[in-house]
Amino acid sequence: MKKFYILLEEHTVEKFEIEAEDMDEAFKIVEEKYYNGEFVLEPGNVSHRLMSGETADGKECTEWVEF
Image (tube, rainbow, N blue to C red; front, side, top):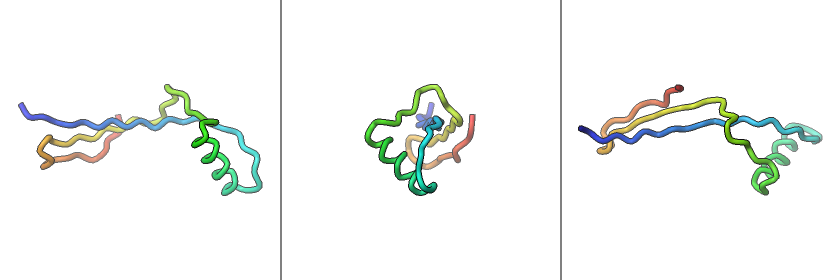
């Protein structure tokens, strides 16, 4: 039997309402609030799931695939 490492990635989605002069300012506000812990994504709101794999010896790896 060979050993494999399987990587799982989830993308979560949450909508936040922001008041700003333009989209750049809105992005800056959201980023600041996110890093300050004011905006937190709730678990379970997954929009995409991806999987990739590689052999333990690193000789083979796959592309990311959605599942």
